[in-house]
Image 1: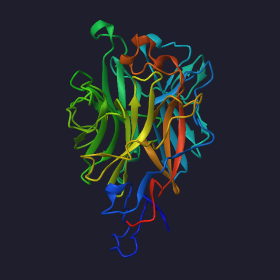
Image 2 (image 1 turned 120 degrees about the vertical axis):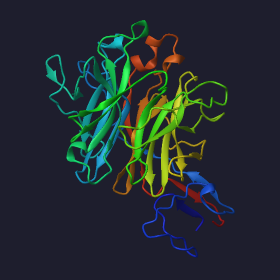
Image 3 (image 1 turned 90 degrees about the vertical axis):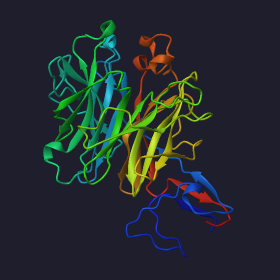
Image 4 (image 1 turned 135 degrees about the vertical axis):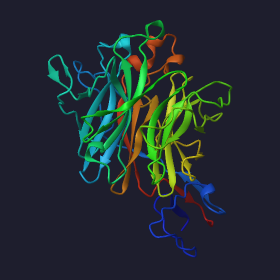
Length: 408
């Protein structure tokens, strides 16, 4: 047999010592095996769903009529057979354009492909109920965005804390420099993903917090957490610029992770990408598998696909796997995801024997983003052009493969 499928849930190969019971062994490339001869390693790209995009902007009169956008999270509950999605939305009529506000939406699905936007009792538009969330307001701040949502991993968590989320709050009235509204982060808990109760502690967003949070994972049984973040951190990029890259923070709990910088995990690589914006990590056995945006924002049109990195030391160090190959590639010319792909948080969802990968996609006209790449900040692509939610799938044991008449 000259082709061997690798990198999923693997048992011992003939002639090798058996792994411990229920061991999960990820064999992704030549660095994951002791030795090989006559073998070539390949990444197995995810297959885009034929009904993509699976979640579209609303009708012209609706609050999300321009975009279903990042940051966003899709979570699957096998126990309930239910998918939940939290996403940012923008109105095509630009009612909130002066404030650059993306509102928060909630959607549900039974199969992860066909979605419904339920009428909630929280926000109306033009006298009609919407699927928009407006969970609370506190003093002079109000929630304006969900950075990520996760399901509480601890079995003894109270029902009221089934879901946790990191929210961005903005001032209702500007009081910052040049009339800008100040921002702060606040954690919140929810029993159902719809009704949220904020934690008491809020973190002001200042110059000492130069990043956005994307996700948290439990770090050990003592309920420490690691947070994956994106921001303009040191060291600088290969071309000397201060660009976005992936970092992490650690703390004794999700509400008390310190705001100081901890470490950079993943930086742009010359000849591959200019910046790394969003990332998403999942624990597979003892390995953390990360999907990340490999971005070339200086291109016209811009370009970005989704690639793979792993950590085998609990998230302290990551390395790229098949660094020049994409797990999810941009679409063909004229397609809805031709230009730029942005990964959701918790992007790898196990559904039976498949991995569902959710991502946002942009068409060719979406350019001049982020803000510093646009001629004027109010004309960047994220304010003017549509975005959508897509789905790609992988068999659970088919991240990669090796082929050749040789030995491992």
